[in-house]
Image (cartoon, rainbow, N blue to C red; front, top):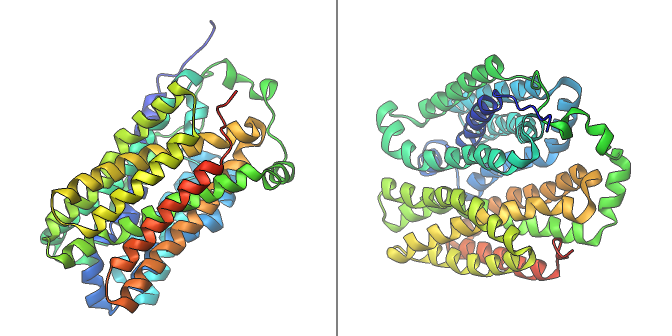
Length: 404
């Protein structure tokens, strides 16, 4: 009763989806070109792993400052700043001459990613009534997953044959990011002209966010938030470490680049239905813990199969693995507010994700290093499997946040 919903909210979803797509494509367009870059710039897999981990490094450093910038300048301008940095330095990767210049431009590209990414999900709370939060958030985040998936297919089969050089691929992706950023600043609005709904009209009447120091103290003294942070670390670390090298690993095993790209992309494609179906089941049964430890147990098995086979087992394994980890992430993201309450949930979420990004930063380098010193990807696969299975332990240790 008396609730007003802006029709423009779906335009905001569309342009947010495109920005999410841009972030995913800018990060993962590097991975299908690893072997070419290694040859042209004299890189090894440990250096490749370091480069993959530079975007998570920037997120560790800038995730919280990115939110503070938005508090000062607004989401619209902050995402603009991030998009410009993403596009310009993403483009400049095409001019890299060695490991140092490629790493520097990749890190600065990650700075743009880190400024934009933490603020795009806030669109949901500003533009949508509570009953539409789930569908709006789910729709927005599919942009990231599509952006991660398409480069594995299009770079080796379309872009590289078309432009003939990895340098031009980076240039095209950078220009695309700048074009989508231009669309953002032209179409995005800071807030709806009319109230999205009563809970958003006067949020301070229903809930006041706690001061940062107070929230941080509450979070750091909460044992279950530390367990949840470590759970997130051991979710993202093997995911990024494995996804970052799978296409190269399959190519070196004898699969053609196009097939290897399609197989690798299936992880991201099947994260999309998993991110809707598994959380829906979790909400329906009112439990979190069983989904975390059980998913981790099965995901580790499928990851091992994906890393050690090339038959139909490989295809089935990457599909199941993508579906499972796609469903686990939203469950974990929902838990901070359930553990510490909405008053401290923003700080709790930042703490949790910082740990996750730290894992995503270290794992690719460690996987690459192991492949160099052993001349085999098998130890890297075992590493990713072990990291995944550690989450079985943390999943069992977690507090059942829906148990009320």
